[in-house]
Image 1: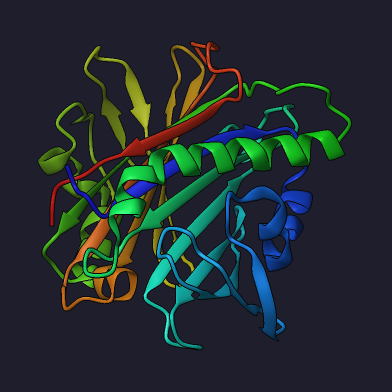
Image 2: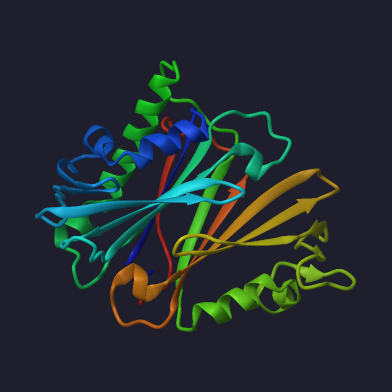
Amino acid sequence: MEENTFATSAYIATSPEKAFDYLCELKNLDEWTLYSRTIEQIDSNTWLGTASGYQRNLYYHVRKINSPLFQGIEWHCGFEYQKYFQVYPVFLFPPNYIEPKSEEEGVYFHWLSFIDPKRRTPMIMQGIETVHTSECRSLKAILEKRAGHKMAVLGRYRIDTDTIFIDAPIELGVEYLRDLRNMNDWAHLLRSRGEVASEVGEFLDEYDQRVMSPYKPTILITTISLNKVTFIPNSNSRNTVRQLLFPALMLLAIRLHGVSFNIALLFGPQISRNDMANCKFKTSGQKV
């Protein structure tokens, strides 16, 4: 398993706009995180604050993600102002991104953490699962209480995620993944059905059900994002696959000329509803 990438996801019963505005305000870290406390504002998008995992202060800088399909942010952190080695991308998926005709209100929060192996402390590695799951639950509760809810609201869909490190240039990864004609080479559960173009094609899944898969590439701040929508006509079901390519040098501040590949699978509707807070945490991938 890759030891540098961690993911936390949850459904939050608030509007995507309110979740986005709340996360963009770094001062709110004081309210929902375990021990990230702002001390001094440096500029409009940067604060100096505490960080229990690193056992020293960090500069926190926020960048906004505004794509045509969803919103999000990136937290950039470092020991020196404007010299950031830590990146936390957060994506806010509205339900109609997962399923265009969805009438569900709320937002799906997907938080990725990339930990620099040269700077991480034993406290970070021992506590990140517990801490980030607890913080995710705290964030969900704060935003849902503001929306008038008295208890955790369960979402209709779910997010599964996985990450690997690929020792290849990011440009090569983008060109390969965006071309549906390559699906027969790497998507072993799908087989092409008829002629497939670079961005539109029809496939058969492992049960010989027809799957139509259009691709929509998106360039975010420091991320190349590929959106693949799969639609199964026979069952009228729809899954959305968000493929994210992150330059390793930017994420981990180490001399790796490769890419971290995160795949987020957004499924609906939910099958299991046993998790009270609906917060999911996963460590995944192949060790770098």
